[in-house]
Length: 114
Image (cartoon, helix red, strand yellow):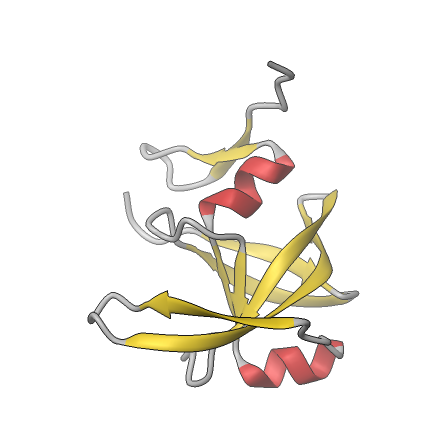
């Protein structure tokens, strides 16, 4: 499928975000981004990284915008994240998007009320 990078706005600031369809969460940012947007964490949680390490992350809520669609999302702060923003499948689904595995781009599928 390749790498999917999208423009994302968090807390009113624009970044490039890497889509991670293996991340079953919303948004992860590095400490620098968290400070730039003024995140105010309200709790901690643990995450298991791909290499098996267990780490604590701070959790906050921020307004996130992708392709003009806006929502509030849980934003986790991961020390040492080597990129600015990692976008998980829950954030995409919340906004009504999926990643097309053929093109590697996000596509609008809409929101369904079930």
